[in-house]
Amino acid sequence: MGFLPVTKTWEHIAIEYEGGEVVLRFREFRQTLKLFKKVERYGENKVVVSSSGWYESEQVVERDVPKFFLMMRSGAMLCIGTPRCDNEYGDDSVVLKIVDREGED
Image 1 (cartoon, rainbow, N blue to C red):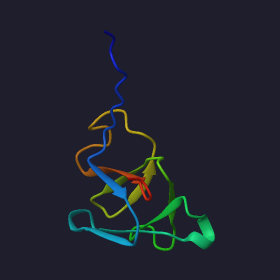
Image 2 (image 1 turned 45 degrees about the horizontal axis):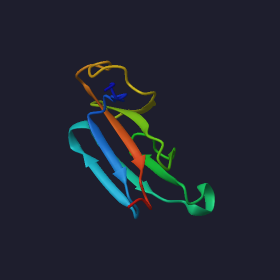
Image 3 (image 1 turned 90 degrees about the vertical axis):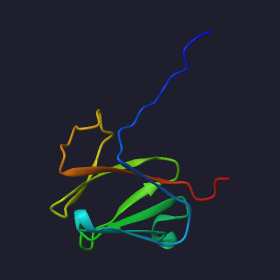
Image 4 (image 1 turned 45 degrees about the vertical axis):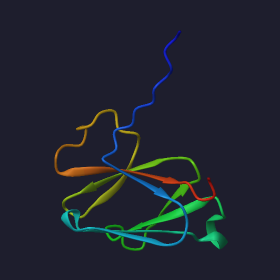
């Protein structure tokens, strides 16, 4: 009997988008996130992430491809790579992992 490979990610909050328009408020981090589709611009397989800290800017998350973000107490939110450890970015921030799971059963 062998060992199975284990993939460990270090997110603090995992969000799985399953359709519709979603609004999430994080008062402690002064953030409002919106997840929604823009089919005419990005197609069916992508969800748009909009943050109150980005003003008019948007990020796109492809279906089944996780994207990581760093939400800081100052109200800023950054797109980051996969974190290497739990406290890589310190205590004044939260790592979000957002995945588009729309259409899965």
